[in-house]
Length: 287
Image 1 (cartoon, rainbow, N blue to C red):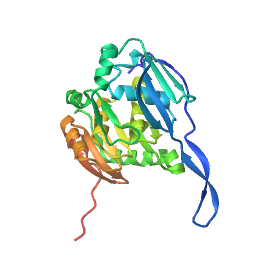
Image 2: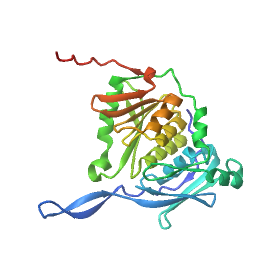
Image 3: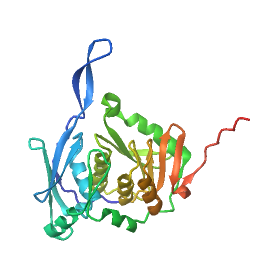
Image 4: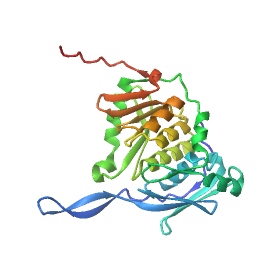
């Protein structure tokens, strides 16, 4: 897919980790890497939308992806500029035209909020829960268990900030490849929803179609994570963690292939079983 017209962007990413001193169990002071965490208040056409706690590594993509997943902006072409200013801890997004019915439409969408269990965020705006019923995912794409295992192993090698400092979640967008899976982008942040929103923003900026892609998250599979994946038209959602009941219900409704507890060569397949192909020989049960 051709890349769309890009908005004017700042390049205001912050360092991912900082060094502090800590006392270990032997009474020694040791330099220790800790994850960054910064408040970033998002403004849309001068209207305050939300304050996100973020690593600050990709703030422009985070702002775009948040607006995309909350359906506050309809397309990347509507965005004229994203300007991040850490002196004021703000991200100002300006549009070429007022989205979804102008200021009145924006106010109406913001008036309806659902408090979520997400870390790093906490609300979903407008009729996102209702719009999920309109999503149609491809059924002509498959993923083999061997490709899944390859993806899980590759993601483990990407978790650089987590290995240095902990305290972050990671999300990856992947595509099938001759080597099993190719990671197209990997984002870590203090909240898993920040990470998925940043990937959504990058996908818009680069014109990447999600309809045959695989999404991986280190976080639990809540209803909001499933919804965001479906909004990006991604048919495969994988996590090394578990899921919630509502996450399972929504995944069943939209037909996502949902895999949890994915670690090493283990996984639990919850929904969308028709897309996963078992190609790896199963161990023989002991008598």
